[in-house]
Image (cartoon, rainbow, N blue to C red):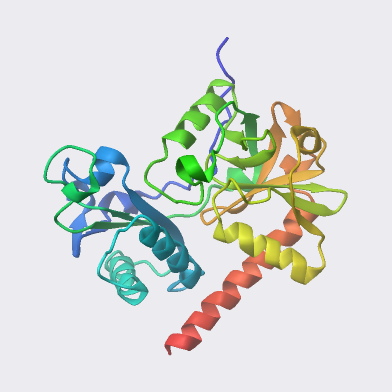
Amino acid sequence: MQPDTAHGHTTHDAEADARNEHILIYVDGALVPRDRAVVSVYDSGFMLGDGMWEGMRLYDGEWAFFDEHMDRLFNSLRAVSIDIGMGPAEIRGNLDRTAQANGMTGDAHCRLMITRGRKAKPFQHPALSRFGPTIVAIVEHSIPAQSLAQKGVRLATVPQVRGLPTSQDPKFNSHSKLNCVIACLQAEQAGADEALMLDPHGFVNTTNACNFFIVRRGQVWTSTGDHCMNGITRQKVIELCRADGIPVFEKNYSLYEAYGADEAFLTGTFGAQTPVAAIDGKPIGGDGGAGPVTRRIRQLYADLVAANVAEQKARRS
């Protein structure tokens, strides 16, 4: 029996934009046409997934929550001993230059990728990466597809889990995404759009691409955070709920509570808050999962982004 993927979509679906076929991409200091933007086959990111990345959105000429993204990036780089020889200000300048070269001031998404760099030989040891880090920034014209907000995504619980920090800490936004790719494949093969992943103890954790929240009787629940990406949008949602008087809990909970949720949504830089329409074939609430609490959080988050953009503009003026 073939899975039902006729109306499938992912949390990163964007509206089609032909301009992206001709963008310039930042590669190690140069702005290169998309069809010529390449790295070496000896690059440690290509060979081993040895690198870190960040996703950011551009609003009115500002990268939302840029400081928080840089804190996470540089903490990860330090943890794996990658020294890129530049700080957040230099990165900001390179991202701005890339966006400006592509005529972008908003409705754009950046994937900033940093690896340990080109290797002298095709083997694992980090000491073989002797030529300095590789730094790439892809900035695309990008508006989340309307279907994400209208229909929500369908999740399937999968056997692949997010592991313990002693295997590969899920807080690393690393190039090594095979764990999540396997989970996504398992979900697609079950007829869903994306995967709902449990933690090593069987509690609801995260999806293969985003952080996961449910709403029960007006309360917002998410995982403890011990086994998931330390999402910036996730943290902003938690803080917004606290400030607005919405009860929010970081806690262990099972699929039993998730199946009975009134609402559910995902958080991530690209889609902000994406409603969940179903989990394992069980509908969540009504209106594609986007109930009144989700809609309230969406508005609070949009206001927070606007305030952060205004603050950055004032700081740089």
